Amino acid sequence: MPKRVLQGTVTSDKNDQTITVLVERRFTHPVLKKTIRKSKKYRAHDAKNAFKVGDEVRIQECAPMSKTKRWEVIAN
Image (cartoon, rainbow, N blue to C red; front, side, top):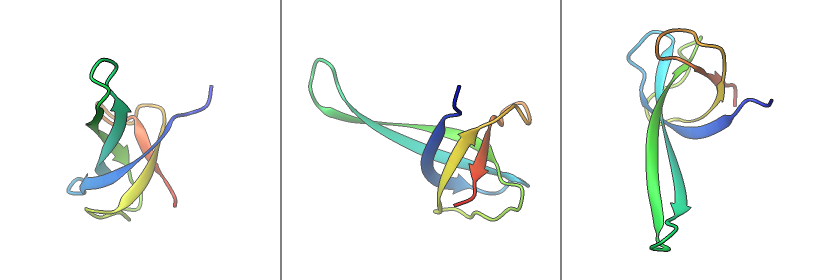
């Protein structure tokens, strides 16, 4: 099964080798037929501490690295 890939914006880089990525998705409400924006934060592994707040990044699923980290940054 292929690994999921998401794109989002870095919101925090304070932790060592970890960034927080805000991923926004848009969809049409089934009843109201209105476009809705939902967002979710993911913690991703950034081995080289290369990304800073505001950067656009792509993240990919991986094996758990810690209690909260299950994603890793894909080199752009």
